[in-house]
Length: 306
Image (cartoon, rainbow, N blue to C red; front, top):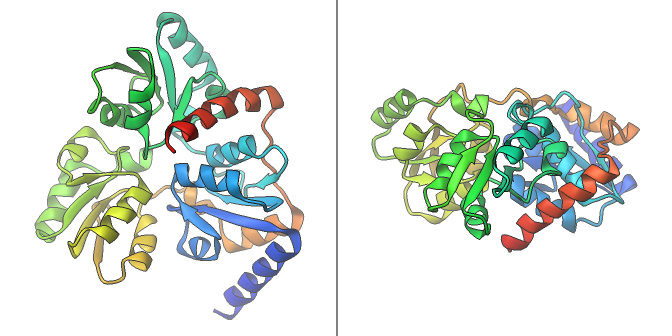
C-alpha cells in the first residue's frame, strides 16, 4: 500500500501542476476508477469531455473514447496512458466498408455506435451510445437506418421502432459481452433466485430477452441504486461491479459471467497514468478534416439526448 499511496500522491500532484483531469470508463481497474475525477459510460464521458476546463485530459478507456474526447476538444491535449487499449469492436467497421453500405442503401441514414473509429464516425449522420441508441434511431428522419458496428445493439434499438435497421457489418460484436451466454444467466439465476437481472445491450439477444433490465453501464448503476431490490445479477464487463459496490453498498452484486473481461480496458494502470502525466504522451490526435466531420455527428447525438 505504501508504494501505491506514493504513486497516487504523485499523480494528484501532477494533475494540480498541469491542470489535468482523469476520465475513466466504468470498466477500468478499481484503483483507476478511484483516482479519476469522473467515472461513467461513453455518453457521460463525452459530455464531461466537453464540459471540462482542464488543459489536459487523461483518458482511461479504449481508443475510440479517447478519439471522441480529442474530437470534442481540439484546443486540449488528450492523453491515453496505453496506446494498446484498442477496442476490438471498433476494428470491425472500417470507413471503406461503410461507404459500400451507403452506396447500396443511398436513402438510408447512418447511425454509428460510439464504439467506432474516427474515420467511420466522419461518415455518420449521428452517433449513439448504449444509453441512447433507441432514442437516436427514433429521432432520425429516414425509414431505413444503417447501424454499426454492434449487431446486438442494433437488435436492442430495433425493439422500439418500426424503422428498418440494417446492421453493418452483419455480425459485429463485443468479444467481452459475447462471453455472456444464456447458460451463464440460467446458472447464475439458479444460484441467486431472488436477484434481478441487469444486462448491457451488447449482450446477445437471448440474454437480453431474459433480463429484467437492459441498460448502459451507468444506466445499470442508476437502476440498481433506485429500485428496492437487494440483489442483482450483472451482465456486462466485470469492472462495473466495483462502482456498483461503492455507490450501492447495502446491496449485493454478482457477475453473470466472470469471463466477461475486456483486456484492453484493463491496460491502464496507475504507473502508466503517472508516466503519461509526466511526459504528456501518448497524445491522441485526429486529423482536422476527419475530426470536423465526426464532430458534427457526435454533437448531433448530444443535442438529441439533452
